[in-house]
Figure: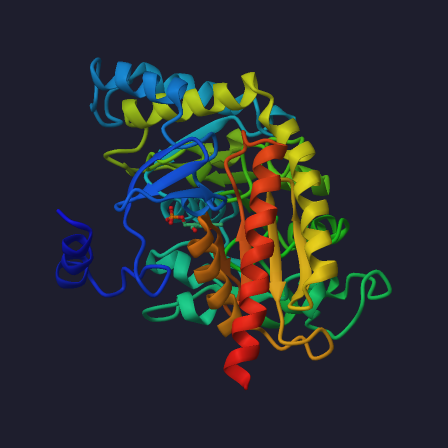
Length: 436
Ligand SMILES: Cc1ncc(COP(=O)(O)O)c(C=O)c1O
């Protein structure tokens, strides 16, 4: 198919809900490491990694070799038969969870399913039903996980009973109009009031992304999770850390994002970067929580041998190459570069994130903080023109998200910063032109 035929077929044969970035959809033909090429042969530096998913580079040789080996050995049996790749992956995951305390895994096909399973486990374990999620969160596209999600635009379908939404720690736009640290982390302390007034007082659990991904890499202050975790536990609930975007070393120095906050969750969910492109969902829990899920439940493709072999190879690669450390080091270098861009581009209101998960929130002006939504679209287009792929997010669509493969180096960051600098300059010029 030609590029035009592909775009046409997309329009004709896919739900229009399958939306694409850019005015003219980018048709990606192939990819290798940190680069992708479009159907016309143009090369792009990929600093979004297919939505925080390409963790160890496109078509990683070691990972793909493991996939090829497995494809030719055993492709599918379903979970009613035991297989080596699933067992090996579960064993590996148990060895890297915080304090080695989360040791039992349930595999599915996506982050949405992983979160569904986590909520089910919380309800089975506690005997309670109500779940606290956060505003500005994103937890998936199934009925239940749209219910958990805290952004109106991602909530299609009817509301889900038994879910309440607490304030998130969005310091740049504090829901209480306060400033950290004088605020005494009011957003976290409000959890007590929320549970007392909007639930029966007995909750099954609290689900949160350590750094809110789709929300625009919103990063809570260091005290946040310890405060909310204590309140939730006092009300009978357990803590589910949704690490679909923050897991596997990306935040720097640790396997999981939540470890930066000194809190040990009862359940962790993963997907995206765990598979480096293969469809996988992981719910890993403390044994007593996992053991409470009784009765019949099955995921036909959960623990699929090929997917499991791929994920295991990804984890081995991350460990062998010490990529968590690289995320800390190269992430710090990237962060310094983004702060430098902020000092030169008025449109950047906030720089935030951790490791190789960094974001720029764009604003009309730094005083009013009015979201620069249209300009963010222009910046995306300009970056693409320059050969750079980045992501978009945030409640107002005004956050540029940066999440390159975790095995990039400083030279890639230098190239990225140069391309983004150019794109931001073009954005400001275009925006000024459209106002006149
Ligand atoms: C934090 C988080 N949780 C869950 C999901 C849902 O994952 P999936 O799209 O694989 O169902 C996403 C997807 O973006 C996510 O970012």
